[in-house]
Length: 140
Image 1 (cartoon, rainbow, N blue to C red):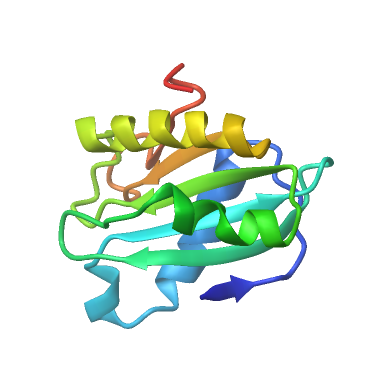
Image 2: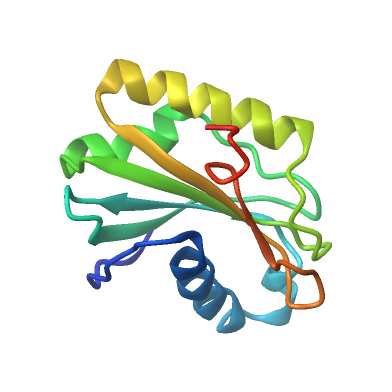
C-alpha cells in the first residue's frame, strides 16, 4: 500500500525517523503496537518518490520478502531504497532477524540494480537514540 508520494529529500537517518514517526503517530493506538515495514524509494538525488507500507505484522515480527520490498522499486525505476521498520517495544536495537533481512536485501538489491541505502529501525523517544541506522552500524 502506497502511503505517500509526497517528495522529500532524505540526507540522514534522522530524516527517515522523522518521516516515519509522523506516520506512526497518526495511526490508531492498536496499530501503533504492531510492527510495520516500510520502503522509501529514492531517486539519484535522494528525493523520496514513494513511501510504501510493505507489511503490517504483530507485536514482535513483520514477515517480508525481497520480492515484496523491491516490487514497487522496479516498477517506479528508483535508484535506491531505504527499508524502515519499527519495534513496538520501543527499543530500536536490531535483532538477529533484522540483520539477516538487511543482508538479504543488500544481495537482492545488487542483483536488481536497486541499492539498499539503509535499513532504519525505529524505537521511541525513551531510548537514546530513538532509532538505529544499519548503515551507520556497518551492517550494510
